[in-house]
Amino acid sequence: MIILFKEEIGLDAASKFLGYTQLLIYYWLLQQAFNIGIGDTIADASTMETINEAIFIAKNEVKELIRAALDNQSEAEPGRTIMESFENKVNQGILASW
View 1 (cartoon, rainbow, N blue to C red):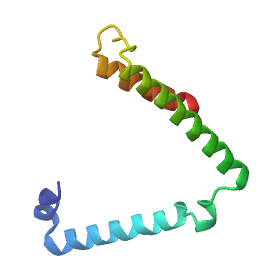
View 2 (cartoon, rainbow, N blue to C red):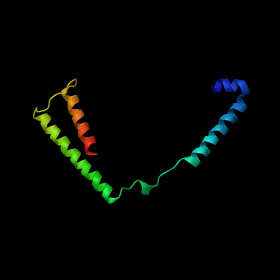
View 3 (spheres, rainbow, N blue to C red):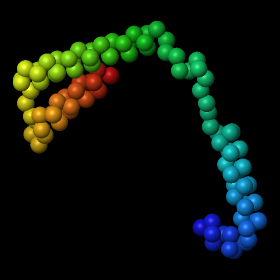
View 4 (cartoon, rainbow, N blue to C red):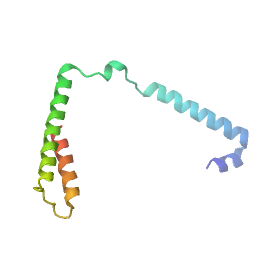
């Protein structure tokens, strides 16, 4: 596209066109985009407590799954190997905690 554009109107005009297009997009993003500050990334106490509880629950569920796997109590799900079944159960447990 750019090569055809350059051939059609010339190198200087194509270069100016691309430069102005980038400038236009830059100013549009500057007006429409948003940013966050450090205060937006720090969780309050109740949110941190909820996160820590979810992590604690997920860790315990994974420990139980590991213990069951080590004791040869885990079974393969239909169409999966034992390892794939284990990974699926771990992922489901972690997602359920959230």
